[in-house]
Length: 113
Image 1 (cartoon, rainbow, N blue to C red):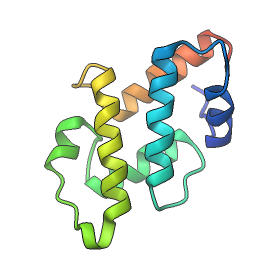
Image 2: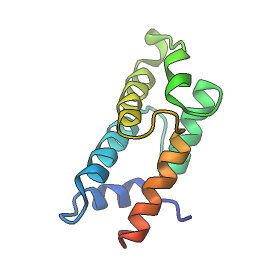
Image 3: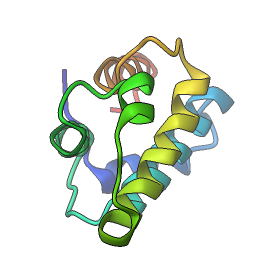
Image 4: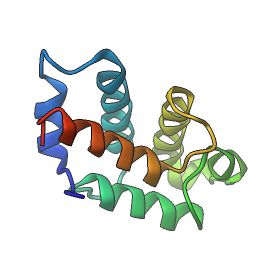
């Protein structure tokens, strides 16, 4: 499935025809990406960066169990807290990777990408 760049995602976010659920999910993702201190070009690289940081698949449970040194990684902690909000929109047992796949599928079916 096609990867979505951050700039492209920002343009999709502005669309009037985007449903409210997808808009909320994209808003949260973009906020989380914006807080992530490492350079991110697309959704897949963001998911990979978060996965590398927390040491495994990005799930709500894994994020909650990850100890973050706030003095060193405050922005990453903020980004992770944003992702916890994203998990509230979806089945909380889904991984971030699966959420991104669902979002891409919707955006593809609706001809946004």
